[in-house]
Length: 214
Image (cartoon, rainbow, N blue to C red):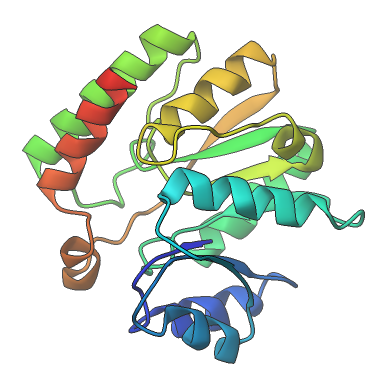
């Protein structure tokens, strides 16, 4: 779980995850608001970046940490702001194992549970269209932070784009590595809090811009 300035909510997110998953690792990306302490108090293992490096860098650190444990079978990437559902993550892990996949991507466009305004939907669709064209992997939602990776899938990734372009980089590496993948319907919960922390239309535009420039 990449973690940056989420002290107000991360404890609750960690506690909910620990009800289903045995280990939660938060990569605190240079937070200055007590996020690391809140995550640790809730039961997470916390790995810290001394300075803010970006979500892609935090994910790479988290994958490397998880792979140090020889018992790790799968890895879930999960946002710290409460916008993802633990039930969706658990269903994706079950699918990864039952279908012998390397990666399961969450998609908010495979059902109608996620409430998106029209303009944000268009911007995200454009980013996904460009990612699909540039990577050869055909997804419906290329910029969803909820993913599940097998140990082999996680080991095949090397994320070098520190910020939003990392999502397209992951998709590209999945394609180049001929990894076995699927998409799974998930609900993204856009709350007032999550919008204030970066899930606004402006952030969707930033995703598109960084995808085009990445």
